[in-house]
Length: 113
Image 1 (cartoon, rainbow, N blue to C red):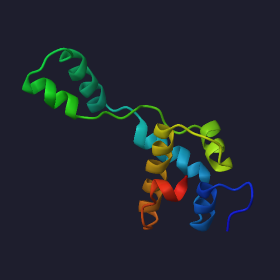
Image 2 (image 1 turned 45 degrees about the vertical axis):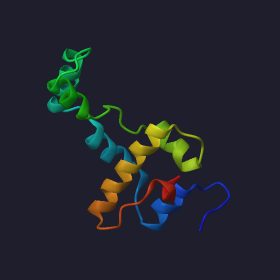
Image 3 (image 1 turned 60 degrees about the horizontal axis):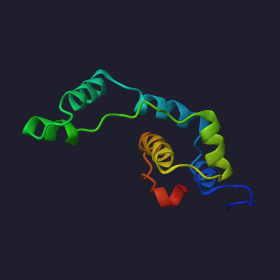
């Protein structure tokens, strides 16, 4: 299954016949900022320092990061080098989207890293 230089992620991709370039495209689609994300960020800025119901509702919503998986980061992930936690989650979301499209079970973080 895994060779000495192959990571869990690379093994998962080869096992399920997923092209690594699809991860870049899927991540860009998932993480790109949308108008509703900008509205969420604006609402958070406007309610900063307030403690009413509107402020709590604005803090509860979560916007996309706007930072997709990049080629250097994906290369590091495929080699098995260290990545930050948020970056691993971005890769996981992209792989889960592709797995959903291929009608595969969604992977877990521990299965990829």
